[in-house]
Image (tube, rainbow, N blue to C red; front, side):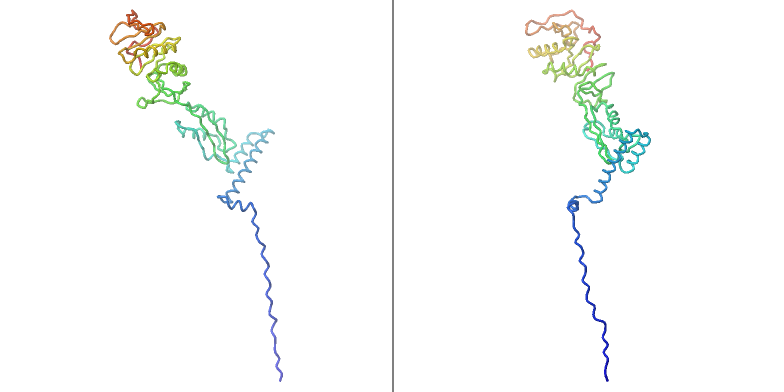
Length: 317
């Protein structure tokens, strides 16, 4: 009896796996991997740059060919919706002026879309403030306005009708000053004295030895100065040749001290002589120039200021 042996299907041979292609990393990808920002951020930045350039080009072409302003504005607003919109203000150069004032001026726009921000208009508004000598305004895409401020430097305090105001060397008004917060700066008094600040500084430079002792200066009759010293005396200077008179007074004070010796008022409106008065006396005294020797003599002048200055002892300061 024969046996039939059934053979099964031949065993399948293993199919060799296909080799996966090696993923090549480009040089650009390697560099991006080392940058400390995400690839998505870089992609957005590139997109913003392209859109910004395209938007600027479109606006330029529209202006050149005379496309109505409404269409150009619409394009600019679309750029604003795409991310080109003022969101931040960076201010540099401020030392004394209120920073919030600069922010308010920079954000005072009909539209905050970057292409519609009028940089010259922002600058012009900033220059209306006394503290600001100059300003530079620029854009940093996509959303920042840069404002660089050059401030004025305080030089004196101007007193007029009881009001105190800080001014710079050119007489430009900076801001009000409270009496209890007076800065250590020269005090000038009288209507229009602020406009004489440059000439006043030149006057003081003529006698540098006296400058530290000057407490205040009163502009009299819109034509000449009365100088008040820290020791209480007042010196009336002439309308013409005030610098030479002040230099002469400084020389006399250096040869024979005059300040702090009990005198109330000195008068040099006549440049040929120095007249002085002591408290409680009705007469002035003519003081001789030490370089020519001599002593004091009486002078019949009453001491009243012919040009309307305050009487001795009543001078502001």
